[in-house]
Length: 153
Ligand SMILES: CC(C)(COP(=O)(O)OP(=O)(O)OC[C@H]1O[C@@H](n2cnc3c(N)ncnc32)[C@H](O)[C@@H]1OP(=O)(O)O)[C@@H](O)C(=O)NCCC(=O)NCCS
Image (tube, rainbow, N blue to C red; front, side, top):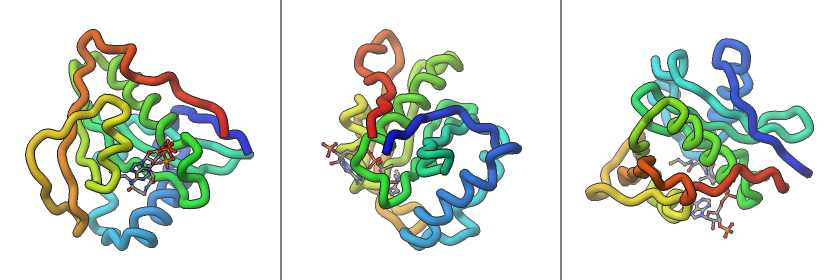
């Protein structure tokens, strides 16, 4: 089934985005609700992946250029949804004029981010009970390193 990535507004689509994140982070990865929800959602830019009108993935861009809360429903992984969400967020970071974008990657997802040009910064640390590494992507004059958002299933 095909999917598409769109920008999402937290006030209008917050319930749908929250449902995806609850499934992935709270239920699947056992992140405490108290750590999942924060004040950044209201001021971040969000993206959603839709398949047949239903939300299957999401991610957000904070005002300081950090990308986070990347989540794709289990049944939809490995089909390019995460890559398309990340490409859209990187594009939005460029639009906002950021010279670089950073994120805290769950260590298992390091290669996923690396294929989008992210490089590790420093060592591993724990966040929400899960091992993470910080990664950064320079946005200065390297637009060609970011693949275009994909729309194939
Ligand atoms: C990480 C995540 C967002 C990736 O989404 P996705 O839709 O599976 O990503 P894509 O299909 O675009 O790309 C997957 C590719 O990255 C690679 N990859 C490397 N590590 C990976 C990982 N931990 N999870 C998924 N893919 C990973 C896969 O091998 C795959 O390569 P392939 O296309 O050659 O098979 C998704 O797996 C997810 O929601 N995971 C649970 C939540 C999570 O860990 N979020 C990240 C927080 S930092």
